[in-house]
Amino acid sequence: MKTPEGIYKIDGRNPQSSFHLALHVSYPSDEDDKRVAARGVSAGYDIMIHGIQNGRGWIGAFHRWSDWTAGCIAVTDEEIEELSRITPDGTTIEIRP
Image (tube, rainbow, N blue to C red; front, side, top):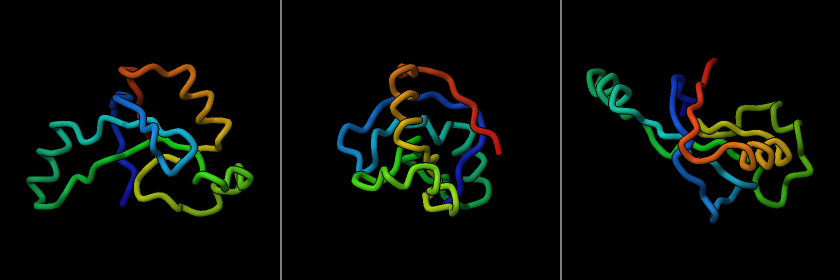
């Protein structure tokens, strides 16, 4: 239930997303899996960079007032439109705190 940190790739898009556009992040990596296996916990999966829930785009930047994702990275609809347009699959990204 936390956003992973590290270097990943955009490895796909979800055209059926419940959120305004969604870019899939290549998490977990082999290194992530090894690290969490040693601790006996799950790495999680299905991390996305996505817009606001469909039909609620009017919220805009106010969505930042609370942590409402389950480890994903949420941005405004306008921001995800730009990211989706300029970020092809295979693009390397770094997620930092």
